[in-house]
Image 1 (tube, rainbow, N blue to C red):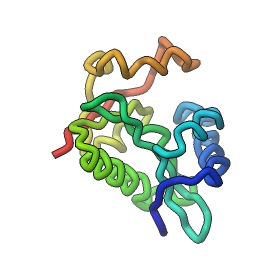
Image 2: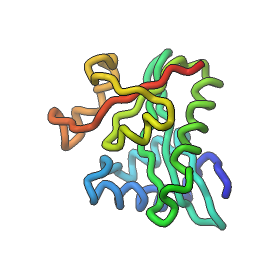
Image 3: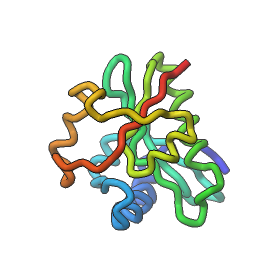
Image 4: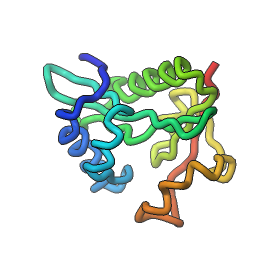
Length: 151
């Protein structure tokens, strides 16, 4: 399996992965437009030419980034691919000299296993919420906030 930065040609596969979990209420949906606009933030795991996991690291501010849209194909769950992507994003954050990375998630236990800690959403800076106003869940967000300090 290969971990690499996403390409434009990966958008449809990334969209299918995210849409699968969004339909099950396990993550927020993403419009294709958003994926195309943010393609440079995405990394994917490829197995024999097939995209089997994807996610992104979005820089929010000078001291904070967010892991977004993390999804693993159902047939590849519990093989460590999600953790591998998270570790890739944490390494990338360190290289960018970002001291903290957070996620808003319906699966906080996964992120806790990756070293994140639970926090109250109110502890996150206001700039984190600028995109939330366009979310269908706003203002009744049921996601849990997790954060990790980069060493």
